[in-house]
Length: 199
Image (cartoon, rainbow, N blue to C red):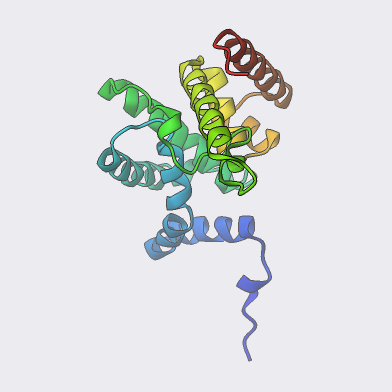
């Protein structure tokens, strides 16, 4: 019986194999990468682009860009972080060309931030839910107004739940810079929240 080693490799190793097979002419293997990551990339676009049809088109364009640049991928890096980096740059450039304003983060339903999950707790009264919802929406509005270098950190760390290391690789900045920017972003959020009397 032939041993199928695909079950014994990690997800990262599998990505590298799929990339290598794609580069040798097996384009079906790239389709597996698209299927694996298309929902993740779509989720990322929701933080930046308003229109759903634009987001769907954008995801397709992103994977076309990734395919065209696949030969530049350094297999010593995680494919996931390289894909995220290419995607984030493409999204920002696309939005700048189209002159679209960024999406209001409080309209993104899957976002989990601060104590949003507590809104659905059975122990929270309707009055408390209304107050907390208002506070959370206020925080989202603050994040939406942050400079890109702080907004991107907040989105990647809290909303996309990426690690410091992953963010460092995606944004191509030192790990310590990620921590400093996140700290600064939280300071700005807290200061503005206090000014708006959210808490």
